[in-house]
Image (cartoon, rainbow, N blue to C red; front, top):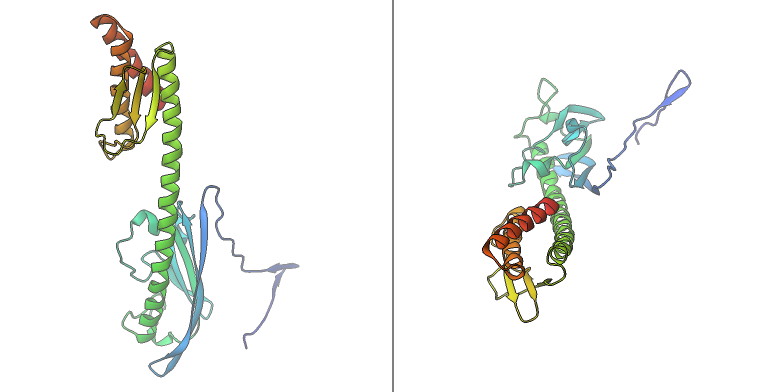
Length: 255
């Protein structure tokens, strides 16, 4: 049974305070690690937690990684490699995770003379390492999925706002003569399709010529500006001037 004791200094009780990050805009996830079994005829018992958050680095950065505590004493600092967990995770995402492992029994033989590191070939250490890495597989899979969904949602929200703004600009600049419609034309490679009979410019939301979102905004601005100028002016000089003003207005508002 573990000893229970209190530390009181000058009438104030001292406690180990754990406050997991709750920064605005982050999505926290908490995971638990536990092991209690014999390894090579000696008992190894440890438990702990891993904290992951998407999509913000743990602050302060010194808490990024995992801290091993042997009988309550921290061995070394927080290991940002997570005991050499190398599975292709991006550095920026590995900074989203922190944790502590509390070893209650075993692992003494793995402690090096400097008492600041472990012998990585020790069987107890390897068991702790493999248990931690197994849990980290789940941690990184889940927070990466959260980050992807969050990124996709933000991109969709931004795209919708950009499309609305673009429609307002075209309506203003054409005096209501040209209407901007938006449709998902999967089999149509063109970014913009013009329906002269209806006085509509159809923005093909399925067309993404380039990977970068800002680059696609520029392409759409140029194509829309060209067609609006072409169908609302009479001379080449007027068309050039209107095209220039439209592209400038669109990019100025949307970027």
